[in-house]
Image (cartoon, rainbow, N blue to C red; front, side):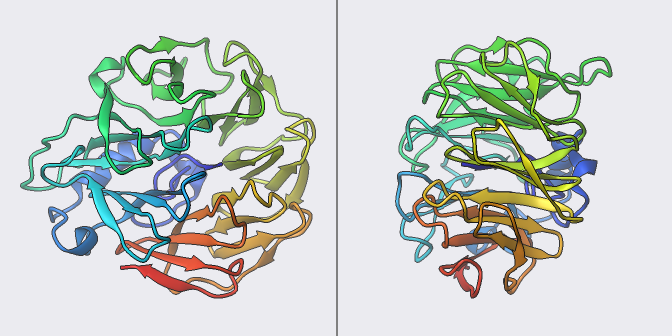
Length: 364
């Protein structure tokens, strides 16, 4: 389970170019809005045309050869490893028309259940016909429906979302626009029909959240300013993760193995987060990803290329670089040597079947 939380990352990073991830933690929603208003085309042309760009990408667990892309102009899907792609949301007549989706999450309990928030992209001359909100798919991203409108939330928007322990459980981090308590955490246990506010977060700079499917009540919350926190009671209380002392920009969970990358380098834990070991790396991290099928193999996308480990994070080495500037990374859940890289602008995807030694373009 790979996750981040920003958008170009997207744990995030800048929408059309790279900036240090730490500068975006409190500004993701604003950045996304600016992303929309800066566009001058309506997304016409193949895969949205030259103005389209990637917000998030996800290789689905339990749905072979399937990858979803959340882009400025909608959601794209392949079910055959990239041989063919289909627009499944964001265009006229589809859900999310006129909106930009920005964070894909898959339920650990039901591989078919996917969630994504979407907000207006405010493209010049194109009205927003879709309802801003959190959208849900029950068929691995083939079709979508509105689960919760953004107007249901106090601030009218969502910073990030994270999957819960059941298919209907979802967590949402929301801004408050106050200095005293900048972000709050909400949870739904009925797929967005009702939401409950949870106790205050242990940090004012949350980056992402997800449930640990190995432990029904456990949540992982990471922060660009304060590190990693663990809750064993579904967010009622939090403890600081041992040995993680610096900010965390991106985190991935692969079974009992956790990789968390940030200011000091990459932390790895192979005992469900009881202990972490740091591998120092002075890099600006975009995202880190691993496959549950081979958790000792993991990849870290940084501002100057792609790094890989095959020994559980003890050592990392640079791989060959894709042909274009990478913005995101996801790994095949069934094969830790199959990597998908998303390109910045225009949108594109490359795949490596050998752990990053060589690359093939599969979109466009």
